[in-house]
Length: 286
Image (cartoon, rainbow, N blue to C red; front, side):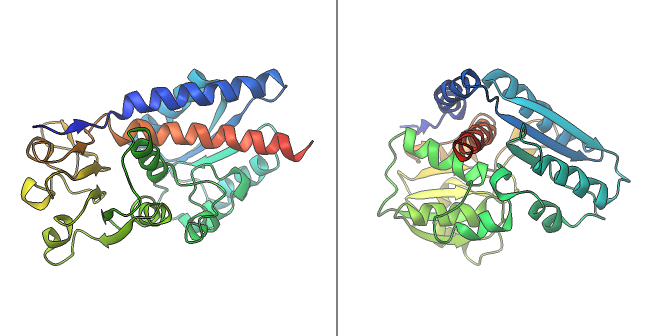
């Protein structure tokens, strides 16, 4: 029997509905949640992502503004913009769209964002605080995965979770968040020797490697929950994940599709974090 589909669009709609009510409450009290996005260069994919985020903000009742810089802009120009936004009481969340041009230092730019406005959860403080479970904001993609699992009543505590991928954006924070919820966690990479030995032992398998369809059915434990964070464009223009969906869905208990799985949850959690930032800002002035 085929796996049940973890429908990210459906879960995202439910979550957005809940948080829109919170945004509306803020607006009624005189505060409109505000998100500022900084984009540097002319990366086509980044431009699309930013447009999607701005549209999502509009749909849920968040004010948004975009600060665009040309490819040749200096890092100091971006830092000055961030500093101004840090001091702007109408902006509750600041997001720097990655990747940045090669002459930028990612960590310096990200850590210049005030921690209370780091709604992407990429500030070194937030990433480090995952170890103790005390982040100001959780990174949006792994946060979205956790919400998706919870909304589908998938047991995490006591389960063996295997995360394939070690990025600071997904892999590492994903592992800590699963650990915080009581899972036994193994972290692997695409270079792990005999990777299948580890993935076949997973009750929950999260894959974020950027390698199309690298996880096949023979690498998955029957009945496992499979979360595919990857999104890759094939030579024919089609999108696919890091998991071979067609074969794996026949043995998994739950599986996320690509597209329509984790992607909608990532943007949704960005919106939630922005609304939460506005709520905290309101509370701090009372």
